[in-house]
Image 1: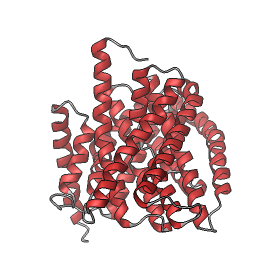
Image 2: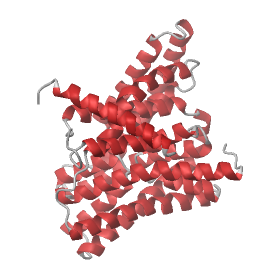
Image 3: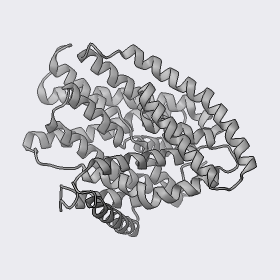
Image 4: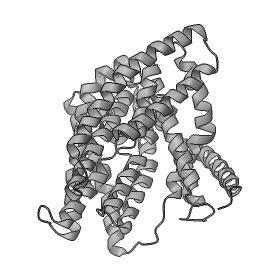
Length: 396
């Protein structure tokens, strides 16, 4: 591919993402919905003007990292610590229920498999894919609705981060049964080690940023160093601890959320995210979608896969939220906010392909789940919040 072709692709993505984002807003839907549809239209599924290149994939990855860094910057650290234990319980339910439901769904289509058989591992892996939660689209929707700092918003973000960590551990255990080279126990150790390093290192960087913030307030060097810190922690998380890079980005944002120039950093970061990286990330979801290998049985499985994946998150997370004394409307919002699948589900699916636990045919089901959940979640969240506003319910 000639290097200048990238410029054409970027022009098409940005223009269509913006136009469809505006169109979505006209229909009272979040802009991210329009951006995903834009990627679907210009990608192989419809017009075929753009294919998912390595460059676009990498730019999309940068986009989601910056988005998660921005979310961390918006976090209220006191509220985050307050909702932590509840978020952990919600995340556990958000992993366990989809894992069981997904496994049962696969066995319902292809027969009950005995423990240790090839089909058993494939069934469990289908459930493992369902455990992944993509907080990025929910976050963008909550930001647009002005609810990201609410108790519900903070709980969703916290639970989604914990959900991903637990999901990665589950994935490693599943692959560990297939591959003798994998060490599930080591993943747990690395996960604990990462958060230990993040707490100690984060405190030191927080003190450094306090000094810089006091000496050079509202200067561009502050957000530049902040973004560098974000990328560095994302790299360390992925490279040395096997934790998703978006978790490192989020932690970096939380570290800087209490400094006085927090809003200034966020404002500068949001410019690049809104204008460039964000649209590429959301459009890339549509670009990945193809239906070339679809047949009647696979189509039926895909539909059931999507329905079960969405409902299992709502049931698991929603019920635990209600038990933890959230109101019924807020419990439903948490369940809906946790049902989005995105980059983490793709990573899990790709790991499964490499390990022989998933064939390319079933990758269509994963793409369809990501697409449907990415479109439905923002719309349903907006409807739920709009309904509350009409009833005069005030969110804290």
